[in-house]
Length: 234
Ligand SMILES: [Zn+2]
Image (cartoon, rainbow, N blue to C red; front, side, top):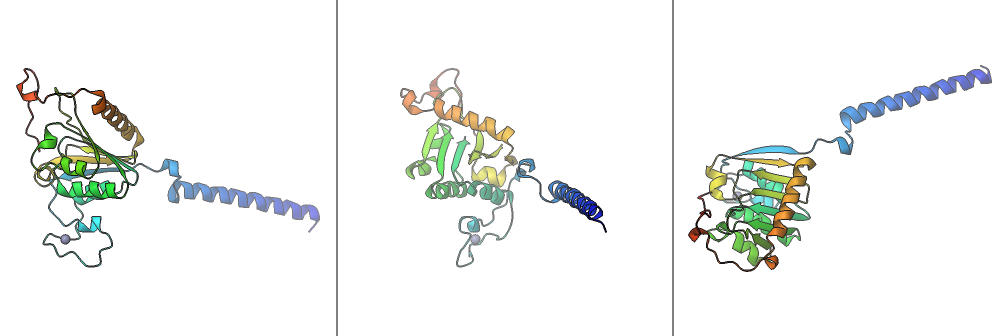
């Protein structure tokens, strides 16, 4: 074989290898290793009611002994999924909740706070004071809570933002009645097109309800003509 033929063969071999690698890259990118930017954002739907089950393992993943409580164990429910998502917050948790009395969800928020997650809670002025509300518990733990200062309307949202990238929203009030006895829906998503507007709305409401910017008001919602009365909403 002449030198010219050898070089020609080597050249053809190099082209074949390059084409092969390119094809392999295309195949992996399309089918096996989707690029980070092309990954589909999380979208999950949860329906309630959710049956009572033990969720102790979610707070203590490395328990030395199995839990002996009487509730069913090892079940994946809508509530356990909600709790798992909530406990996934690492940096920040912004809660915008009309009613918050569920003790397990409160325990999760307190746990995140103790881990150093920055928690902000925006809630309704009337419902934060009802029997069983966890808002006082959160405040006592040092969590920053603000309530709706405009007394003509309720803060009726039910959404949570985790680390500025995950949104939990739906019809569900964070009450045990809603979790265990109501037909409710919750969407969990990391779609930036949905997360961003909620983030903007939270920040807007947070600033608008800064008590430092408002003079103290008397709580006269029920006695003022034309203003709303608190709805029964669990
Ligand atoms: Zn248990």
